[in-house]
Amino acid sequence: MSKRRLIPKLQLKTSSYNTNKLVLVNTKQFNEVIEIGDPVSQAKIFQDQAADELIFIDLDQTLHHSDGLLKVIRSVSEEIFMPMTVGGGVTSLDDFKMLLANGADKISINSQAVKNKTLITEASLIFGAQCVVVSIDIKKNNSGKFTVFIDKGKTDTRLDPVEWAVECERLGAGEILLTSIDADGMREGMETTICKQVSDKVNIPVVLSGGCGRTHHFIDAFKDGHADAVAAGTFFSMKDENFMQTRAQIKNSGINIRVHT
Amino acid sequence: MGNLTSVFNAFEYLGEDAMICAHPEELKEADRIIIPGVGSFGRCAENLKKTGFMDALNEEVIHKAKPTLGICLGMQIMAKKGFEDGEFDGLGWFDAEIIKINPSDPTLRVPNIGWNEISFKTDCPLFKDIPQNKDFYLVHSYYMKCNNEQDIIATYDYTFPVTAAVLKNNIIATQFHPEKSQDYGLKLLENFLRWNP
Image (tube, rainbow over all chains, first blue to last red; front, side):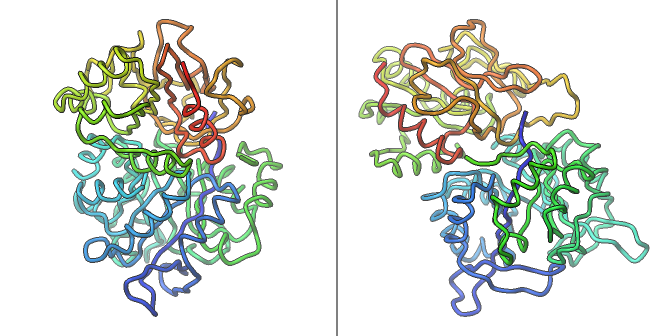
């Protein structure tokens, strides 16, 4: 049986010191940004700690006017031998091709998936469903209901997260990356309720992201949220927590994950 | 398509002189052949035919018997037939069909994405110095159903034994991705480089 996965999420932004370079950042509710270092050396640390996969998201979506993102994933893939999902500003099949050619294994699409649904289907036919990750950002709207937001959390599509996830699967997506904007960077727990609803309705794997602050938040995501994987940014880069400790605790709670390589 | 770069990087990392072949005639220069690949069976089969790679591979792998490693779709394409998005002919090196994973437990996901424990036949050269039941990374919706049990050298459990690796003469192939499976994956690629069938 496939094991549950722990995935460090490396969010990238143009460096404030060098505009040709992408640096690793943390965010809070998609806003407050903190620069924390070099993505390549951080990725190496994650590999040494036997993380299960890596997710790279370019928040500035520089793909169409700079080679910063390609440089990062190229250098990562030269030294790191684990699966990599890459996203941020992907709008076309050519973007898929370019990122795959530079070392990505899976491509994450978000706003463009909503704006041009045929991209999901076409990419899935050409590159295989396993390559197409649809990233779904959710947020509670004024009436207290979770809806799907796009354009880095700025536009409310009014889509229902569960219905949208089901449609993504039907269109050919191979994985869902579900992120709660409200929980992002807050370290107060994950959005397990919506995750469970999505997980139980689709047959493709669901990765839950946003809100990890303690080890038991991972356990909640697996047990209550039925998540197949948990992605965390702040948790792994801002604390002394490392994979070995976290993993042992999760394993001890009865969840089937890798404990070492 | 897809994981070419990762596979290339892994062999470079191991100190091997690797080359990505864009044209079928370049295969002649190679001592060993690796067929990586993620994507769909039908499209892959069509491309191999259209570009002349199918004939060139048959010449180098079957006729000249060069040691060959298939990975993921590169393994699947070695089957007689694939049933992804239609019915297509593969290379036909293994008497096998590529069919959808259909676990008896409906909560299990398809595609299966993640780390699974691989058990293998003990005398397999590919798994030399790798312990039993170590985790390897898989990502697939279809698998190879072999008509000859003896071709199968490794499996993993997904409510039924899923073919994880096959071996026949000079051809060895894995459903999992050694180039994405960290230390044990690199070990396996090293074993392939040392393998003299």
